[in-house]
Amino acid sequence: MKDLGKTSVVRHKVGAEDEGQRLDNYLLKLLKGVPKSHIYRIVRSGEVRVNRGRVAPDYRVRAGDELRLPPLRVADRSAARRSVPADARLERAILFEDDYLLALDKPAGMAVHGGSGVSYGVIEQLRAMRPQAKFLELVHRLDRDTSGVLLVAKKRSALTGLHAQLRDGRVSKRYLALVRGKWRDAKRHVRLKLHKYALPSGERRVSVDAGGRESHTVFRLERAWPDFSLLQAELKTGRTHQIRVHLSHLGFPIVGDDKYGDFDFNKKLAPQLKRMFLHASSIGFTHPASGEEIEIAAPLPAELASFLAGIERGGDRSSDVTGRQRK
Image (cartoon, rainbow, N blue to C red; front, side, top):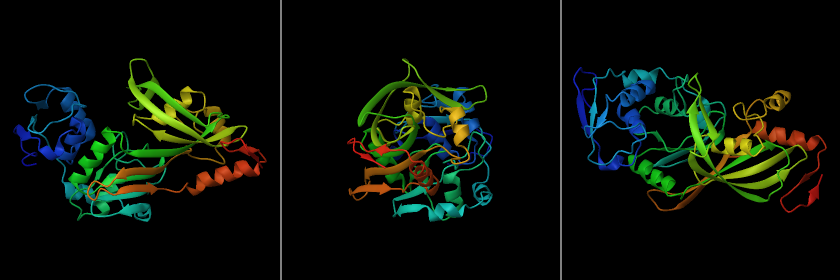
């Protein structure tokens, strides 16, 4: 993208390889160095036009769309990369890598990208650690407090191919969640409409609302104790905070969840568990270049495994999904 630092309006055409992306995400990639908050402001104010008309940030761009972009001041990209401190945990967390993709086991507490009070996240750190990489983009997202498998595309073709699989429901995403309460169903489909909104502080929240977007999670019981249940959650849709809101709405809040959880209960557990018990345990997809079926798994982090071991040592009787009892 040329001449973004000048004072004139820029007109830009969307290429075929970028078709289907949300406008806000497309502009974040196109306008490197422009703050996310500024991009949202110029879209919502109408300063950004698509084919001479106003559109919302979630508009899906199409090949041949003409974008009108207002004069912008763009930060120096190389200087921005140099200012991001490297985090050695990311290199150690790589689970899979080839010429097209990189998968890593994201630590809890690390945002996937900068914004909303976070200066930088996983993707900014990866770019700083690999300045020679021409293309590094998130395929999907994980909440800051969720650990587990995160995919990063190393080529535009890989990104568009995997986004197509996500839209078509051909990506298998499974999580492990520990909830408060004794879950009794071996398998349960949960379908609820979710509405996303912002608090006065700007923080995102999600609630169950008849006017919201459809969401679907399949829960399977892994283990049950008198006060806790370990569930596998399979995402059929990928709404913001979907698993957390589904479980909270059903009366089984995720242990350690500081947005939708049982806050008094979490406070009592704080000496033993200092994070939310939600982990992206595996992801399955078709490799966008080779066509091979790929499944990548991330082991349960030590602090979560230790908490489960503590439940067992507490003397609770647990049962598996078949109902067999064991000590």
